[in-house]
Image (cartoon, rainbow, N blue to C red; front, side):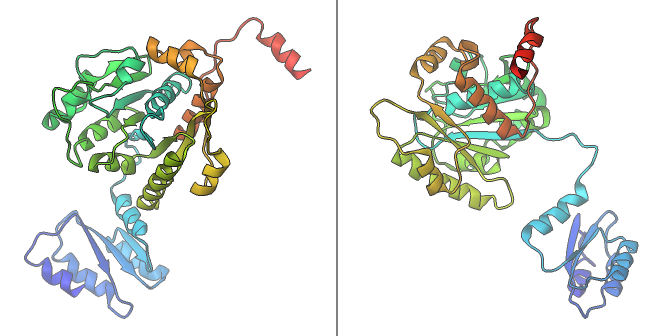
Length: 357
């Protein structure tokens, strides 16, 4: 307290001052002296060890923003500071879902694109797919889109990034789904700094309820930052040893880096390849200490047809079992259980009566 008073006699005070008060100090007297040197608008949080309602009321009367009782964890301090600036009427920011493969060629991009389609079509949630594999991204092919501009225009012009600029780069796929496509060209080298995509993600958050990141299988500063900074992470793996090792490594690192957030999820893809020895879902669950949220069977015919036609699985076969799996993954990642009700038919009442019997 004394050091704070002395420091701010000759220096402007910051937006927030966090004071740790010892039990036998005169907190109230010190705050009265601090108030004489504080700028208007400065907020003060007091960290103390005395749990006293009378003291708390006196602190509030003197304009203290919050009183936190020790001992506290890091997240308690973060929560207290964030609470000072939260606005109840503020528009909610969009949820970022990052999808990444545990190994190259496991179908992470295909799953990301189909899950985003389910979020937009079945959950009726405005969404955007950001293809972060600038050299070899396939989102444009999968959605049958060939936009002249995309995410490269934003990442190479960070000073121009704002809502209007990003809107011009988006390609409309459906009523609720847009695409921020990768150029998929090799004229330039795509080396980025750790924070290269931050402004793009922040801008998308302010305009879109759901952002699905198609993260390439590489380990760089910006891919690690994109994964750790996402609201939810889905790791896609095939049932072999290399995928198990990589999934375990990514799961443990991401979970440790986000101790106060939801742990990452993972799913198994391309399960059931004929004559291929596979590691079972139970063995994956035992090694990673959590089960996969979905197991997607090896269906080369329908997945190949969809990829070559620039369609989603739901467009090729609406009643295929993987279509339902993608919807379940979409519901798990977004936390939404409800789906957009399909158009009823004249036989619906009769079918419902037969089901009940």
